[in-house]
Length: 400
Ligand SMILES: [Zn+2]
Image 1 (cartoon, rainbow, N blue to C red):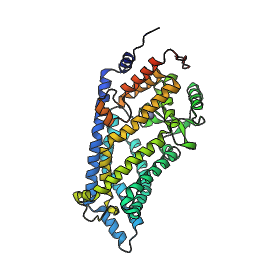
Image 2 (cartoon, rainbow, N blue to C red):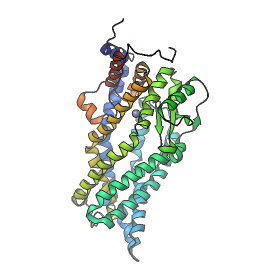
Image 3 (tube, rainbow, N blue to C red):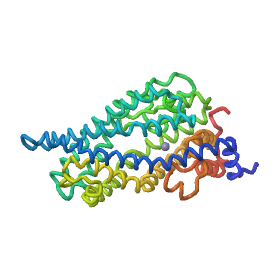
Image 4 (cartoon, rainbow, N blue to C red):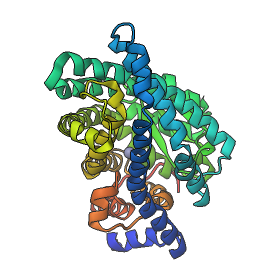
């Protein structure tokens, strides 16, 4: 009988990457924390510019001349704001989403490819915000002081709608999904899907390496639209079967435990809180930002102010949102370990994610900023599980 030390095994996994790779990952991750703050500052400055130039006042003014048509005024304000905001924010987006990722070697996408996707994102954003914000303002007009509660229901409906339709409507716009080719990887994933009640007829590979070198897979959709999708990066970095099983087991955990429903519920509750606070803070914020013509939260020319207030509340709620997500991520790891029994496969895959999510954050940093548990704690959990189940471990079918 050998003695297995989970702490030493965890340290050995982390030591697979040289210190300079860990240092670079820490710089990338901690810089990313600051981007949250700077991103908010950028959106605040842009909102101030739009408010001070009176962009939306002019639209509203010319539309209201004949007779008040709140639907049309809201729709036009939303569309113009979305476009102007996108254009003014472009230099920041280029820096944060493209240049920085390229500098850290996390993306090899060229600028034209990135810009093309960003423009498609604008198109989707216009449609989504036109629908969502038109309905939100209608709720504000109809339900008066209680709109924030109704808006929580609207948010839940919108999130569910997006989850169900995204694999069908949105994801194919950005990536090419092809059925996984026959072979040992597909066989392993199909067997796992059958064993865990996941639809096994929809196993896809997508060209995720186009946007990023991240090692990742997902199970997205709900009910009939659910499917397993693996980024081609999982194959490029010569994944072995234990690794594929460990990762796909994690993703199937999200599906089987219906994490998307759980997240929709808890994030909608968080949204209700954000809307409630926004309702209180809107008029003081409008005065501070110099939006003099705005006569109440129902006035769509106050949209830039509303966005700033909700953005600020959500920025401050970062630890809450991350803790909600981190909780289901930890649960998905547990599912993978219990059902698939590949602690080393999971650990090996986790080491590859360190480059974009530093492995050993401080406890407070992890609590505030990490939407997944840190790799050091995830690998340690896998090694603890391995230690506890060594006696009854079945021989791995991975053939390693
Ligand atoms: Zn996950």
